[in-house]
Image (tube, rainbow over all chains, first blue to last red; front, side, top):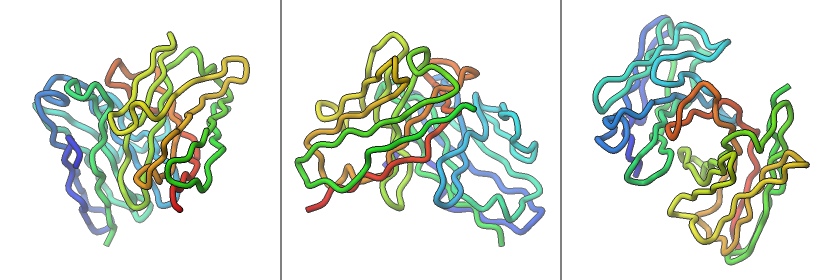
Length: 111
Length: 122
């Protein structure tokens, strides 16, 4: 059971836009802590996709975007491609746990 | 090239011990915040431990008192000593570096190793 809630799965056709929500509480996202997003392709290590709510590391396509409001954050993927099929995790810090925390992960399926 | 390479995983009996390593290249481990993150088979990511550049260490409640994070500065290597291992410690263990572009304590991890599998079973 994670303190950050994500939908287990989302799907979309190629070219469509999908969003993944990450809902926290007043001890993590709502407290102002940054949210980061990772992409994990099957059998590989996680890759940083979005850092500090909205920023993309060099090399990450601008099809990926992040936002944050209140106790929630979202990752949007526009122009969905087959190569985007992966697990996506949000991450923040929880002051009650004094620890970094991850969401349970969302599997994105390209139909 | 900035890189992390884990090693030392394997099969261990319940109650046993194991030390896994994470060799860094392209940057200095002792100058930054390094963490261990694990992933049980078919499950999500779980933060395990951190060592700050100043040497302070912190642990998830699930491993506190059993695991110890450390580093060897001249070898530029991070370690995780795991004692009193249990079946629910079975996971791929990743080492990860704090992104210099993120804040504190809400750090992001920009460099990850390939992971090393630890299986606890009799």
